Length: 332
Image (cartoon, rainbow, N blue to C red; front, side, top):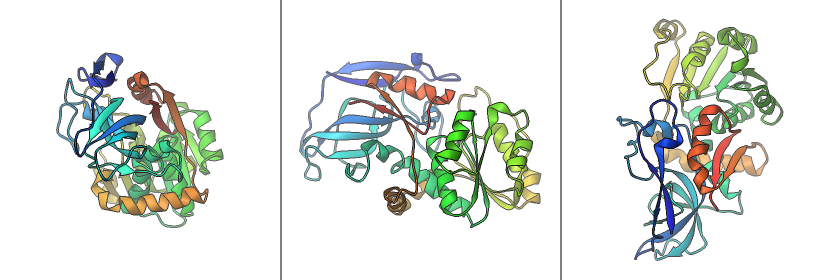
């Protein structure tokens, strides 16, 4: 038998297990031109929350009563496709199923000798690519500048900070615990960190940690932290709007400070960033990240939860900050 995870209903506020349904079906077989895949590692990511809303966005919403999908590393267990052989490992956007068939489109064969398989949905997957291209295309970091990162202990943020250090910048990270701040400084070489749960005035805390102001802000959380960061931006500063996890479960659109005058006075640029906009740059990003990884210039952290049935809970746990680095579910 096979098993899949279905979107049962659309969450209102924070997702819960009631929004998901496990469905048993027969194990499929690969037809002509197809391959049969067995899931090994499944990526759970905050942006999936947005796809659970029935609204137009940069990527279509999930449909009710159909499987959810995300980046997955899978093994080819049967092949009727000349481009793949049994025993190959692939990565790509696949459904939350233990077994599934594919014609191979959109799948990349990965090298398990270069890095652990889980790395291909993390540091060598969309996570690392997002960090690299966000800084490259929008941040345009210059030597000696100050880079501020929110969600800094997460999968993307921790890579962003390390790239900033490789570019000889001062890097300050915002995270949600003293333990995470220590990890940022001791493992990822951040210059300083701010525990947002331990401060009543984020604007002042950022000012103290960034006495020369902020040149580039890589935003993964949005909300009040974004407001505080913008208040500390230097002239010609760049804001990369990569994520807004603080708002994903909001039932109503929250109101905040009006930013227009600050953007004008400081000649700031603020740009929404979706990594899929730069698909043609993926190979160059992977090559550079692979070189840094091979030469021990960057590190990565993973939180690996075991068991296919744990996928929904691992996703829910993202919004409680229970992950360190990339949240991954190991299926087999």
